[in-house]
Length: 181
Image 1: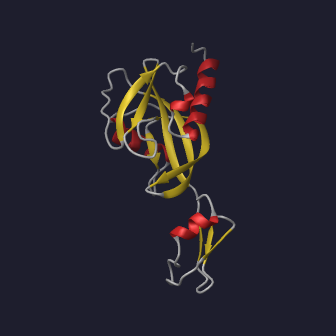
Image 2: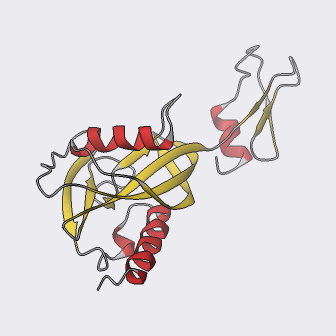
Image 3: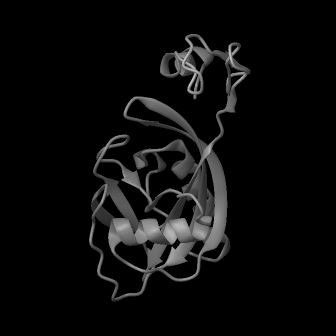
C-alpha cells in the first residue's frame, strides 16, 4: 500500500464491527477505535525464475495488466501453505507447461504491484533454473507468449517490473563471473 489515504479508501469501515472510520497508523496498520480491531498490512510473497535452456533465457510476454505486453519471468504469488520453491514450480507449470531443474536462489527485491486498482507491496524472490532442450513451451494463464534471448543481451527496461530488472542484473553479474559471453 502506498499511503494512508490510499489504504483508507479501501477500508472505510472496520472489517470486524462494521463501524465507519477505522484509522490507518504508521502507513500499514488499520486500527478501529470502536472495537479495538487491529490489522497489519504485510507484504505478499512472490517468486520468479530466470529459466535457461541451451544457453538461452526464456522470458514471458505478459498477457494481462499490470505490464501487459512487457517482458517478465515465469512466476507469481505464493499460495497459503506453499514454500517459495513449490509455488514457483506450480507457477512455471501454469504459465509455460514445463518442469524445471534445481532452483538456485539469485536475489530478492521489493515491488509495487497494482492489480484491479488495489496496490500491493510484494517481496519478489528470484531463482535461476534450467529447462531441458526438448521441453515444449506452452504459454498459458496470464502469459501471452514467450521469447528466447541471449541471457546477457536483454534490455532491462523491457521488463514489466523494477524488481525483475534488479533480479536480471544480478543474474547477468553471476553469468559473467561464470565466463558467459
